[in-house]
Length: 327
Image (cartoon, rainbow, N blue to C red):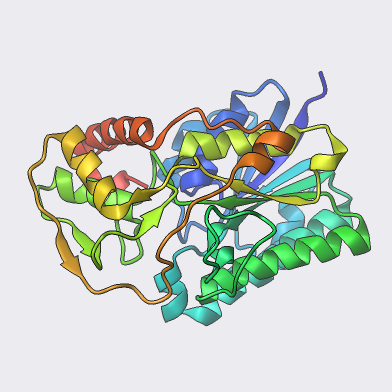
């Protein structure tokens, strides 16, 4: 069996570090290098891999092309997970979001092209659907972006398509829908909703919900996203390449129901505090995952409820020892 050397950008982050763990346990993988500037990721997320001789950590920024080129040396496959996430952060800091998500991604694609790397799988986003009212969301029907973050993720897809046509670059883009799971950071101004709910429950503090809580999302346990990445990296059928895929569960859950599930799992009677809506947020998001199922043989193994039960146990154990080293 042929073994591959892989680069994971953003590999010290939430999804990236979960993916690295799976890659190091995969017999098709000879070596994994992580490139991360630790602005969103954390060294403790990759601490368990540092003693593995098949693993290398390179601290650096995807906004620097020479750094990306160095990270891509002797690499067969690239998993590009590095990004500056969060719609609210992009509203506050559009220039930085643009630099990281567009310039950084263009650097990765260009290094893949220049070095003749076999394939790049990159993290796309459901935010690309923008103001589209279609439900469920299908890959070929998008609306207008409604946040700077959404613009950057759309541009990533456009650059991938152009590089595929002009330079023969092989790619797969995975449009994540609200991924959650172990190592997702509950700290900071732009933390996602599930880790914030976890933190509130474990600290016995009432959580905050933006708006009425009836906005809905297709929440997706991280093991499902990891499975999709492995399929995308190693799939052999040519007609699966140079395509974009929704990665989700195909389940619609309101934020209020989400909190009620977690409160029930945790045995908490805390009631949420409702505040104003967030600028740039879409009201509803539900994925059609039939394309990923058909072409990538993607099959989400965890429902939202199963994922919440698993992640609550993880947060409970880790919060008990050192809350600051979560994420």
